[in-house]
Length: 492
Ligand SMILES: [Zn+2]
Image (cartoon, rainbow, N blue to C red; front, side, top):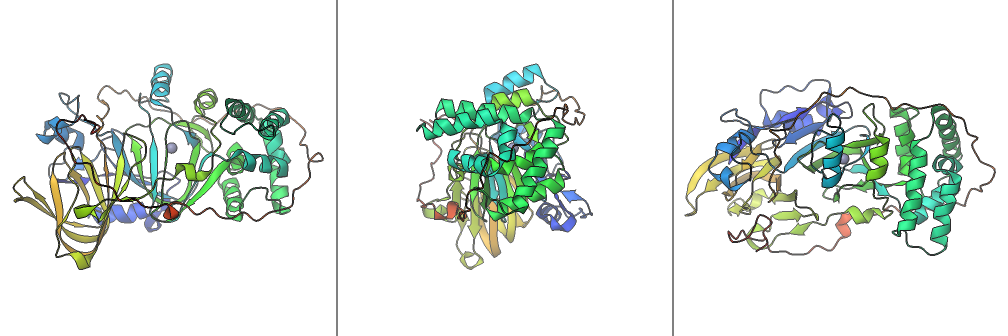
């Protein structure tokens, strides 16, 4: 095992100074670091060239360390290169205001986009994402169920204008005729609505936003909760005149409590809103943005990439699965994805007399300690100690494949997050990055009247706040042990 020095980003959407958990955690683990009064958005823990971790003892990049280490030879099909990359990046994020509304491409889409536009799509890789809430964590994710969407179209004529009334009628008629919301016809109707919205012009958008806020001020809610209305108002403050202000009317607004976790693969429209999370992503930086950003908006790619799935937010939740036996202090979050899995490790100081082993994994992993302190030892196959490390909040540890580590002392309750994957990492050595210039989305000018008379405001029904993952039935599960006869996915 090796202690790592990692990389901290200062994007504008991050929380400022010591308000940011990223800054506090980074300062705890990097003694020479002083928190300044500026945004601290993300702590990156991985080998990606845009923010590579370094081994503290040698100051070498982790990717170089792995490429030259004995255990690293187990890892990758590109181990003859100077760098061996991990297939994931683990992050801690502190979010003060909405990140761009975005979608990530599939692997096939990423290859095509990279070939067409390597400036804006620097990787040929997909980028699934998992977010685990450290504090109350809010995001928009996936299109709302069709009935909620229809309720909002009925209640908010400006939304209907934005999507095109004919397109909206098409979706409503299909749903009323009994078509499932997953039916291709329904998704095609939604795609037409979305496409129309992305062509909106500046003057029209201004009028539609004015009409939307007039209705909200009058108390119209449709299928919106009060906290979602607050999100819309905050987005209007942060991104004046942006088409993304409408997005909470057609996307699910999820509020995760600490310990809850969600996952979305490619083709899902999403945006983080606020809070702190541990995030796991594929080792890629490919993002197609739709709104709420000064960066490049690629409407064509966006419209092609989305899956237009209308579904309740529970679809995106990942249950916590406690491991059994000697690993009962570990909860696993395992989405349907080969790029990463997440372990939450919690050890109480009262159990300090007992040795608490980490699961032995035949793949590389990175662990970040967010609370407590203790002593971690690495042992060989004869259970003899080969390395000892005092660990405390802020420490980040790389554990090579096959290494056996265990906590032998715990002076205050430990909490750590470990990300791992059996996949090969990508080859970033041949990656060419061309510097991007920020581009404002051009808005051509065309005027359309705002319809208001043809709709009646439905009586408001109270919306029950959805309770997420903690109600999920937890299942005991044996940790799959590595079998050398198995392939990299653990399938024999
Ligand atoms: Zn994303």
